[in-house]
Image 1 (cartoon, rainbow, N blue to C red):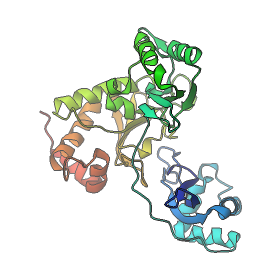
Image 2: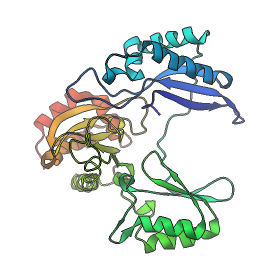
Image 3: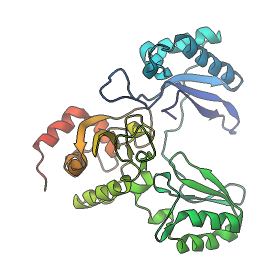
Image 4: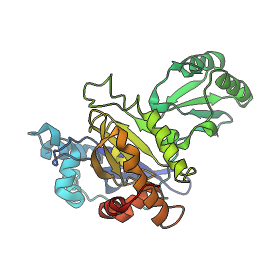
Length: 346
């Protein structure tokens, strides 16, 4: 939600009746290499809005962008640049001038957590839903892995609906509990693993289509990301860190379609078989972007670039619960570079 121009978070009372919305503004992923006037940005907290006022507040936000957004330079036309230039307090005052009344302070919420709803879950009405991990969103038949055929068989046999998730996967819904064994048997027959048998690195990973489908792509993303998951798993195992999870993203250009700038570790295409390495995003995708740790890293040199970061994390994190992205965010670029400059690979 922090990547959006406008984000709305539902706020309810103790009886789960709608009170209103926490509103955030000014997020966006798109940027251009070597053009510092473009940048990825996480949204800011605008404030709380009563349910009866939410449409008017959204209209006021749009009017503020319409009248004050950059209409001369297309690369800077997004609302995030207006929010950035005015600051959130200035932007809030501008919106209030259109709205005609003040926006209330942001309401406290329970801490964010990352949930992708993979695996089996109760639906709340006596039925079940099942989240199936789809690597990089590609539904296909490939050798013994026949996801495309499997989905057709499941749909025809059990008449279940599909929901596409924000993490490029699929949820099968409205499943009768009695159908669970049959569904699992069909999945096994078609080589489609349940989430318990999916590497957590793959579960958390995303990539954009890139080559050969996207005309903006500079280099590979979707087609090479599975090998990066394997390579990072081998590296973690080598460092005796096999139980660790890291949210990774990859794009073939800097436009950010797979949301790389929010991830703990990201590879952003910068040239042929060459990537920027980004670190420092939140493991729960909350309130910040990462930053470019190192540019123009050749594919063949990726392990040598990442290994010092992982060992630094393993050695110097606060405790076993501090995630990779939180660690990088806490220590910062200078500390990461200094450690890497002195690191000698085992």
